[in-house]
Image 1 (spheres, rainbow, N blue to C red):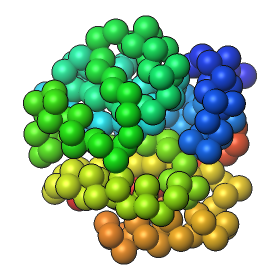
Image 2 (cartoon, rainbow, N blue to C red; image 1 turned 90 degrees about the vertical axis):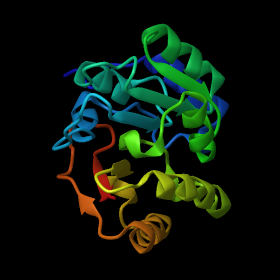
Image 3 (cartoon, rainbow, N blue to C red; image 1 turned 135 degrees about the horizontal axis):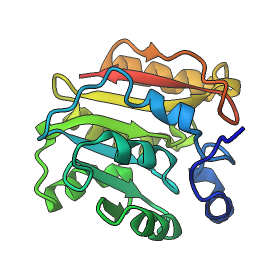
Image 4 (tube, one colour; image 1 turned 90 degrees about the horizontal axis):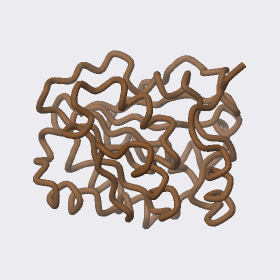
Length: 199
């Protein structure tokens, strides 16, 4: 059974470089990646922002899904090694090395107006990020969450009942309203849910 469509060796290297920034020791499967675009409909001027694309398993699905990935995608990744892999794998797409907390600055640099963002996709381990870092990222997400925007992120099934995960969901719901949870994606290591908030 094929779970992965990314560069597993580079993913492991990135995990060792910065384990706190990686939510899982395995990259997302193609089955989990598909959940990020379920029910989302894009117009030609709409843009996807991906926070923490890693080595690109979700990016690969987005590349195939978008009509014009060179014009409709911006990825923001902190790990320089991952950014090199992403730029080599997807030369048409735009990747910036930096923090998700600086999303608006990166979009401005590429002349992308916030209201064009239709989907914010992220496999960042929000539940384990320090609260100040979460707050900075939430501020940018909040500015991007115009009517019609979707924000989707991963939560691993085994982490669902943990206090940090419950706290994360609570903070998100207080800020962005009711959460929608996908079916459990069992063909992923480990199994995971995709959580959705809408603008």
